Structure formats: structure tokens, C-alpha cells
Image (cartoon, rainbow, N blue to C red; front, side, top):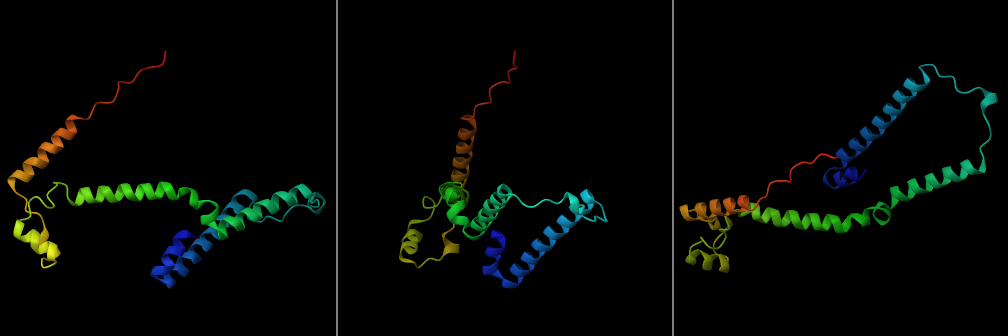
Length: 163
């Protein structure tokens, strides 16, 4: 349902449709499971097999019901808050990785001409003109960096068999 809540900000119609599809799918799956396990014409248990609910069953049912409501209404306060540090670290790592991918040659300021650097600082030069100039030297530098990175890799240890 978190996906439906996030779609709500994009389009309320799509959120309603997706919630309805989730509910219909769950109902169809339950109906199929019932037909597979109980047969097409299930008549229910015989009356003599029915017994009153016990206090133990009520307690278990109440705990499960309360847990379902609590997790459904307050998911962040009960479960999701424990994931926040991990998610924050992952976002930070992906941000750093994205910065490296956008500037893989390390050419952001080094190859921009000095007159353009002054224009960039003053805001006169727009984004498309600030693209780094790729020269033979920057390509050779990137190639040597990649080769140096590959040379640092060590092969995995050989597999050993248990005695």
C-alpha cells in the first residue's frame, strides 16, 4: 500500500485504480485457494463439529488484529524507522556514485578554460557551455586510472574442499 500512497501525489485516479486492482487480486487469489483446497461445492463443517471460541483463541486473534491495525496505521513508527539509517547511507552512496558517473574522467574544472571559469562563477555561462573539453590527455588519464584500478583487483581465493 506504500506504493499506492506514493502514486496518490502523482495521480489520484491511478492510485484508486491500483488500490482496487490490489483488492480484487487478493479476493481472486483467496477464492482460487478456497476452491483448490475445499472443492467447488463446499458446504461447510457439520454443526456438531463446531465448538465455541476459547479465551486462548480470542487472545491470539486480538493480538493479531491489533498488530495488523498498528502496522497498517503507523508503519513508520513501528517498523520503517529502523530502516532509516540504512536507507540514508544507501542514498549517500548512490549520490556519490552518481557524481562519479557524471564526471568519470575527473575533468569538471581542470579542462574548462580559465575565461569560462570566471563566467561560470559570475553566472554568465549557462550549463550546456560548461561541459568539460575532452582531449587526448583526459582520455589517456582516464585509461591509466582504469588500468590502475584493475591492477589493484585481486583474484578470489581458490575453492577448497571440505575434508
